[in-house]
Length: 480
Image (cartoon, rainbow, N blue to C red; front, side, top):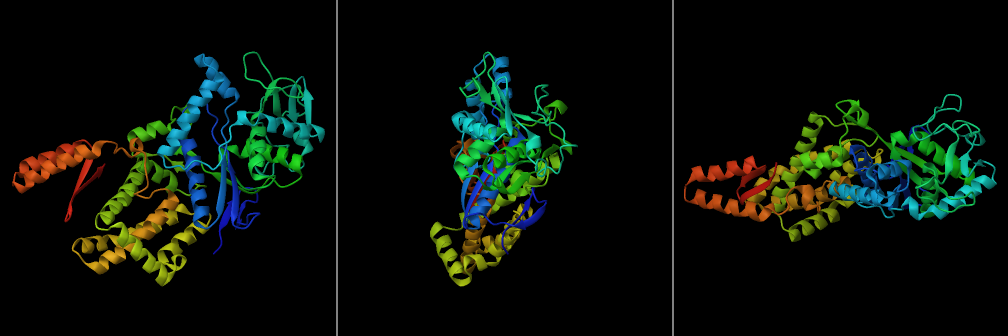
């Protein structure tokens, strides 16, 4: 089965066909850096990280571009509030976003353009729109005329008669239509500004993504992504200005990830149910947070409820436990040899586990079904671990080949138990030497039949969140 995706623009699931066979250009709207990232930012970042990994797993070469909006009204307002420069504010929160997405296992994009590095590209694009008569100048400001674009509203399914102004559309009596949006804003005292044919100023929000995406991926993108909250007005406006400038379709496919809710209520600062990524990482291991975000279908909403968090924690514990136990009885050479033998016998794509996982991924990146396949594999492999611990060669060989496939497939979701999680994110850090020493003391106590002391060490470790597993080959530990 070939990859099919749900295209927001056509409102149906359709076969995916990039312009250049084997290559995909994907652009995703990144953060506006005026505060620390929240769970909604993480949802989008993880969703499209999984989509990128899935495309690569399916054999595509992906050029992934995700921008940073580092000049904006909100950044300027935060800078004034904190009596700092907008540049300081943008730099601090850009680093915060990058660090916390890394903690969640999100790979950096191939290209991460900043708006302030592409002002000249935006000015050229705005000039083209003015020359074509679809944008107009008023007192140093430049507006796009939505009535000049016949297809306006087709992404969101709205018409000009019933569409309403989005959150970043400000009323202005100088506009020809209240829905017209700013392409260029004339300079105000104390604000960052750049030269332009219309005077000093700065770009509007919407023009940034059109200029940056087309600079790196061309006039037509294969995939444009972002949160569902961006469909209108941001992505609607991107289509209008981009297609008016080039005369070509702006993106072949539009993918939008679902919202995050807090116990079935939309997350919002005004409702005081706002959850930052730092909050999540403080209370939960980063891999469990990743499992929560990656385990849901990208289109579906995620409810950040206690039950959902417990389920994600249990899912990660099951994955992590399997990883620890399987690797404890396998060496790298055994895994490599068994993997090659199995591939030679079946072919990687024909292996039943790979085939089932691939079918889920090809069905609009169905991560819940893909995750279920991984758990089925774990259920099959777990009995082999005990047999391998008893020295059964056949069990060890079968386990080695299953482990090799599991590690590859889990990596598509970014939840491989052996991937390099940052120490602060995994919660392990420098605990290993200390826990190892305490386990040695516990083993000495057990050999001396001082079971009360051995149990006391185990209980003290448990109270600190360290779980001990006594296995035939010796004790193992992990964080609760």
